[in-house]
Image (cartoon, rainbow, N blue to C red):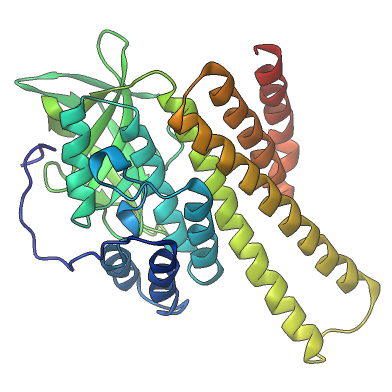
Length: 329
């Protein structure tokens, strides 16, 4: 139990196999149709049945390898009704992007088979992919030294963690649910899970390839911005409905609020499209220039998506990061 190369049988809904863009959007519609008040367990099962979890598996591994722009569209649409489900997809796809650029072909194929069967990944460390964890040799496998937390919509099947080895080598660790003790952080919404001293077999540790981190971070930025875009579209629709229903007055502050929402939506949509296209190219042909271009546009997108309260805190960091991508080209 806990090895990524051991395909265990479990009673779970059978996921659909998505073969076209129309089926992809229809699958997203099935999840959205559950409504905004659907319990987390219903949403998690719906994501499994939908087939959406496997859409980013590369074609070399018999996957659909859906373009990042379409994945962003799905996440944005789901976020309009179910932001928690959209955030779960962000974590899942970001972890899968790390898998795309890590480990051996056998390790990647094994985790892709798990995902194709409907299993879900989350990101340890609340999805920030910070490299603060460590792992040590433990018998014939490895063990995380200390505890970490992961946010998820319902308990995921796998926790993906970035951690340093005793030799200071950064690796991707895949910790299978049931292979270690997991506890829910009391009062957390969405649910957060704490892993402590997790053990994993050797084949659950994947060496990171070149550009694994920047490509995964770029995808994470695109999909987080897509979630924000969906929420803004929902807010604009709600405000317009109130306006047309005569609930809101015609004073200028409401005009400005609606105009600001529309401007934010236009900027985010345009930058998401550009960033997704750049990432598509970098995934197919990861040249230094292509990866740098994807990272640069993703950084600009991250700045544009910053909430007002976070902009003062994070703007200097992001502007410096954006400048660095130009100075190091």
